[in-house]
Length: 216
Image (cartoon, rainbow, N blue to C red):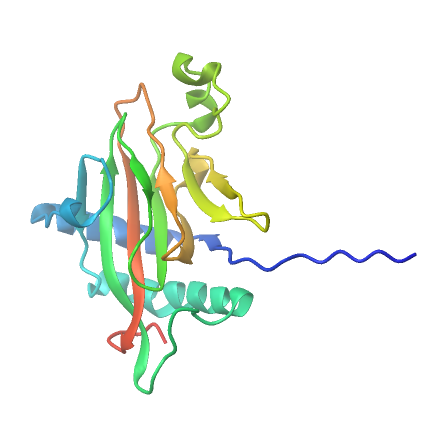
């Protein structure tokens, strides 16, 4: 008797470590934005200290816009199909809709939320804590949810209709790592504790419209 396994399709994410020169330019972009910060908190879901807008048209992002972001989008389409909510019309393409930097301190968090656009992404720039150390803290040590403290998580529905989590452990190795995902995919950022450091991450949304940049 031959038995066959059949996996039901689901939509995943695309991830990868960014080149050092790209990361250096993003740090320069953050430095420029902090000189005249444009607050983004009223547009976002986070309970965090600060979120400020970044200039998506800056020359510092030239390589990111030309090489990195299109590669992530192309990989996602090849893996999971073309964007499912809309179809492109003549003259349309992918556009960087918005870009911002988040500054998170201890006890702060992003509750479960989604984004606008078709695709979204996060780049972890600075991780001041270690998940392996955080889960040993008294607040977490005896918990049956010790896998969440300080971490980043996606929420998705499995083939049985159950809401499940995929968790990224926040360690120093995550710095410079980018994850791109469908904008409607729920995700959240859990708080960290007993650290005076600041977690810094980049987030952005990509939509479809009249082509304004080099994402195609």
